[in-house]
Image 1 (cartoon, helix red, strand yellow):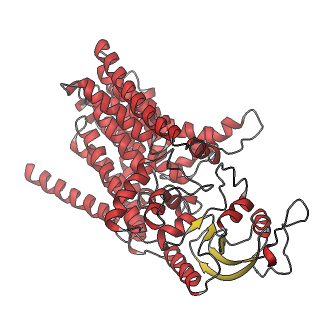
Image 2: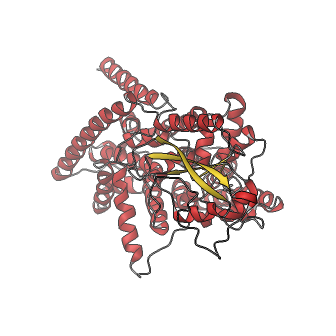
Length: 540
């Protein structure tokens, strides 16, 4: 029996490893086209936006671009790591995405370590299996966005927190937790909504040792205040506070005027969990609710009070609270939620099948036949979801497409073959295009606080780009700003991605008005086609 068990686990590990490796293949490929998450903006903006400091530093000599979107003062960890990486690999999408995949691999290991000390091996391996076969995580873990790294730092902090009683130098370990939370906050500011999960994982194991608990919490809080405060001091001393605050300004969305809007927003944020998985995310919710209702059972109580299970539930709840407050859920935000949802499913199944009594410090307790029937149904749903997801992920991995990469390279080749003033592109996807093709660029959507650039028109006057690119249609507001200095000529189109509103990348030449003339929108309507303009895309 032991020999069969070893073979079973060996085959299982090989399958997990095979699916994990799929994430590292064809890194230049598009975010999977025609997926349920086709509307997410990250696939044509965020990779460039949040790594633009590293991209610019290597390609153009300075990480900072006055008046443009400079998120590095608020979220410096990711671009700093990319900056180091690009020293060895050069600037490329494959390198940036490879870094994200490396964090995905770290997340698998950290998730296993987080569970393994508290549940049987099969439970930890089940959680990893759900992660590697998930088409949702396959799609988003291969993008050079902030979520994979934020998840890794969170899992690392949780691993330290739940092990505090076993450490001889608990105050040092607690201080390290504070440092990790600092890195979480400097990776993505939404980390503040993961603080309750980290707090539960720190407090729960030491609850019976109040004096030790107080000292450990103080050490963690103290190290966070020191290191985060030191970074904020650097930002203020360097005069970068306007750029720091601008990150929060651009991520603030208008909210409805109705008093009940939080309820509507909460429903949409909760409903957004179905992006993670149509079966497993609702199952995670049912397992949490069912365990809470079974509070009278010792096994259920042990699970609810478990540091890992409670932290997982609070991490999911915290992020859904963030999306409710933001009132702007996007699929990529749930890349953090997905990991903790899968941890909840694995632990819930272990409890239902009687493995919960192996939780360290837990108590055994029987379940009625209905509970065991519920456990059987949960297992069937989990197996069905895993099989469906495995086929889905294999399909994505074996059918890569390169529409955006090809479009970016072809666009830059056209720019180089048809010189037109300054070799600089202005576009909402400017940083993303720079990552793929190394063309200098500025963003037409964001105008960071700068006395010389109060709007796009003054930003254009400062940088004098020769080219403009948009998706599918010309925006009347952008045209108004362009018209202050230029007439526009549509010269090329490039098909990319699957979003019906953003599947054609359109390139324009910018022609300065004769004699350096400047049009003032206060004197005339610049939101219309001028006789000098030549473009076919709709004006919206």
